Length: 554
Image (tube, rainbow, N blue to C red):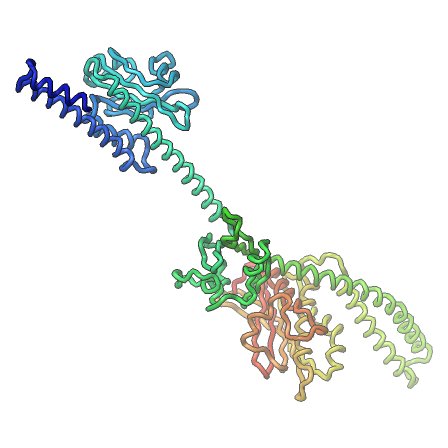
């Protein structure tokens, strides 16, 4: 720069100096400075204005709008590799061929393979760029071509063209190479952004597609992310979305849950698990998984919630079925042992009665023996029927008949506790398609619960067993099998819990809390339900509601 000033002074003060030379030299230097500034402006604009979410065509369009201010530029193109081929990814102006493959014999491949910027003069436009319909098609042009390096490997070429002959010098070529290097950075950032965006989208799609609730919570119990798959039974507070505390948002509590497993997960740095049962009877398994940061410290906890209500009910029914099967097997053995001597007793009494004749007073005693023996035999037969372990298909069933069978088996257990059983059976009750064995199981459970509800009361204890017909608004009919007692009743807060598996108000030796849960499952298998009406201190009423046909509505 100092030498240039000396030379300028010599020219101004020497024999060759003149005002014309001074202004011409000053004008050239100003034009050079303006071009240099424009070039710097274009590079800065690439850094400042080009966003990572822009497409390659948008980037080329942004550069093309400013490039003619820095170097001669009638068109601007960018070719990128795909499957070992070069394709024009973007080119301006619009009449140029875009997205076309560059032939292998093209001179542009030499620049790509050599990895060096080059100047090409006297290039015919029709050979590569124009479609022959737009001016100035057919004319020779000048090209400045620079390779595009991404991650140290040539991934394309940048082309700057001008209709001027010999439009480019080494100065312009160096600028094109600098522009290509900056474009490579922009394109790499765009590619990385697309990869991250695609990975994020795939992860979010997978995360949101999981049907079970998944929640990410930090160590301060704030919900960071969830897939919003919470069941309605989990009491999610949708109105208080600003409150991100998990215990407030999910469980409706003002402070941390007493049995929260997050502390244990943070302390042990291992997954934890607990089971939660809501007031509506839903059962959830909640798994706690620690999430570690770069320093291998716990940054948060993943809550994975699984609704296991149906699974638990099936397990309960399986347990109950296994228990009943064992009891049935023992009862069958006892019944067979009793059946043989009862046959001998009845037969002997009948022979003795035949020998002494009907007029003998002893005949009345023998008649009592025969009647009691026949009653015992009927009870044994019903016990054998109840204890059968083969599959009971649905068949036309008379509820009144099933009630008679159950009462013949269980009435003694109830009568010995000074409980009066009252029958109020609807005459000519229509038959329904049902499993008689399962209906008996529900009725036995109702009767035993009613007996337990009357235990210890001083007043007269009554259990009423009734059947009735209900006609719905849609004109369909339903049959009701009702067991009503005047026992202690059930608290209103507990009515929603009585069908939950393992819930019981009895002592451990009297109940497991499985009876009503299994009974409800049987009712639902028959497309029916169980209705409960109870007043604390006055008694309860349990009704098995079953459709007369499969198309009924409640």
